[in-house]
Image 1 (cartoon, rainbow, N blue to C red):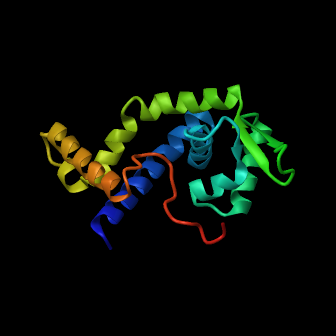
Image 2 (cartoon, one colour):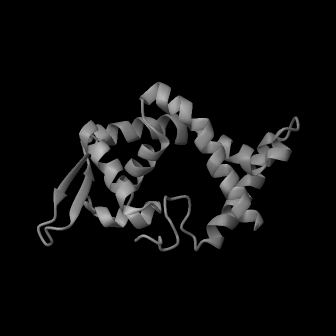
Image 3 (cartoon, rainbow, N blue to C red):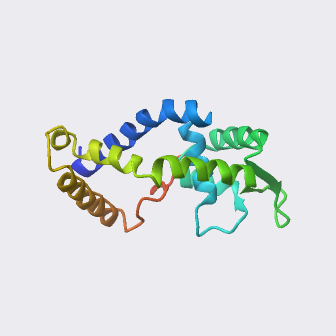
Length: 168
């Protein structure tokens, strides 16, 4: 297994495991719902988004995206409406309630640096456990993340599924 892929996978699953309980306890939301809200809110898409694009963006099958969107709509976090130009197409947008929820989660975990520490720990597990020099280890992790960003075409840390999903 390629080292960058292994480290990325470990960082992803490490963050998922760390966030599961706090998200449920503090916000009553799942990590999958946060991913969906984040994907809907992310630029460069227009304010209303085509539901079919979320399939590729999240790397999920259509039925999973549809089921998740229906649940988010029921909670009042998103709005779905038929497109004027194609009545088969659903357009998805965040409501004020959904944007507030996403902002609260982002402030608590991402913007506060908590997730960065979790990623650093996952990427540099063997180094992180040793005492001292944690700042140096964080810099090494930033270097690894830069290599990863360069390796996938400079897309950065945005939610993106780089391959065509088999069910898309």
